[in-house]
Length: 152
Image 1 (spheres, one colour):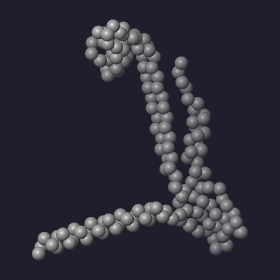
Image 2: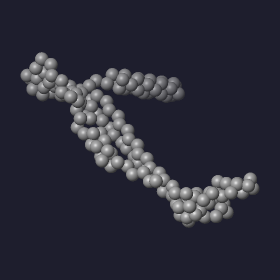
Image 3: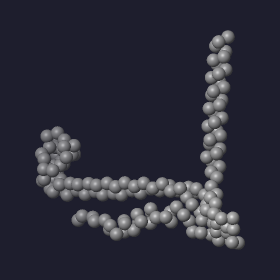
Image 4: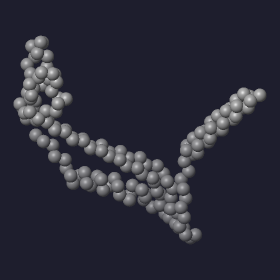
């Protein structure tokens, strides 16, 4: 039995995943001001495949058949232990993966003054940037002091 994916369902899922609704949220209106939230969205996906042979077929890959095993037999058996080689059956495969990352970017604000962009502030990124700058500055000062002491 072969599995056939429902292409209509996959197409609908992709349309939803890559649509404009993933970037812009539902508008919010309060006291004459319209706010439209926006996000940065990164999406990725992948797929897989497979194959196989009919029992006794000679289409197995070279790495599937090791040693002196006959074509179309399972090389994973141990003839000394009395195991009988098994014929390879029909193979299969498949697979699909999907991932997404979203973070707030800001909002479009529409009011009496017009339309303006208000960026979202990522405090974690600001703190991390400050920590990195501090470490780099400390390393530069330590290097300069070490070099100055060697010259004396």
